[in-house]
Every structure is written in C-alpha cells, then in structure tokens.
Image: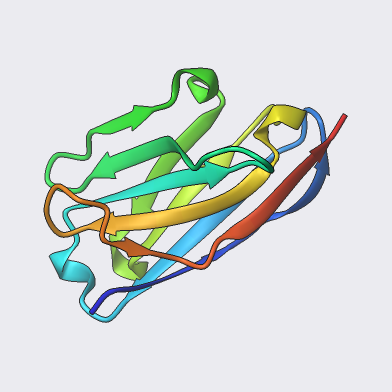
Length: 117
C-alpha cells in the first residue's frame, strides 16, 4: 500500500511561483518513479513531469520545460514540483502519482492551482 498526499496549491497571479509537495507513506521504498499530472476544467488529465529514482532522470511536458522542476527529498519521502513563471493556462488540479512498475497505479487527492491573468 502506497499513500500520496499533495499540498501547496493556491491562487496566484501570472508570473508568480508555487511549490507543490507530495508526501508518500506506506511503503515508499517500493516506488520506482513519481510523476505530476494535471486536469484543467473541461479537459482530460495530462502528464506534466516525472522522475525515475534509480538514476534521477526527469522528463517534462514541452509547455512547462524551463519553468517547472521536479525533485525529491529521500529523507522526507517527499516529491516537489517547483513552478515558476506561472501562466493562466497552468490553472488545473495537480495530482502526484507513483509507479511500482510501468503503470501509474497510485494517486493522491489533488491540489488546486489557479493562476489569474
């Protein structure tokens, strides 16, 4: 059993920054990778960023490259998403997810990010 809890969302203005956190519990040592996804109103959920713990490799959605950074603190079993230069189109509910194999099997409850124009 892996449990994920997101925090750090809020209401900000365009150009501002936020840092989202995702705390893992249960059996965090079994997690091979962690990712961030988002779902905007009226749209499907989409991939934002991921990190593979074996080698620390990362990947990002094209539209957030250079603005968002995914990282982790192993001692705290926590993953972060640093979001800079936020745009109105970043408005969405952000979810963290964990994989124990090739599938994103565990999901948090989500945290709302709203960026005003």
